[in-house]
Length: 157
Image (cartoon, one colour):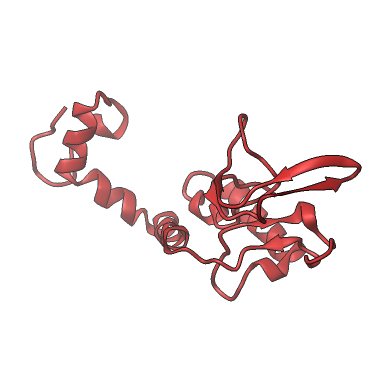
């Protein structure tokens, strides 16, 4: 299980987990290596990362579905879940599961599934003269910016 991002957490409290004191957070920007990391996972991040690393995203999603099926609510992913709290008072077999489903999380999932499937999002982005010009003005160069745009416009770099 992996997936750190900003999102809901089980709340601001402390608990003993395997005889060690742990601090849990509510909504927070979780990250590594500087945290906070209280064990809360952003399950939608598997699909948001799909175009970049399908070889690890799809197995991770399958593992989530098999090991924690209650996390996937129909066709939506919760903002977060924390398996560290599994089978503890107030929590079920998968631990804490957010009841929130944010459009920001769900929207990126839809876009990245389509991007993985057809490359539509990347193709649209790369053909935008405004995005190309902005990236060049910000100092980016090379890669796809050095290739001619798919539309007959002057390359901004």
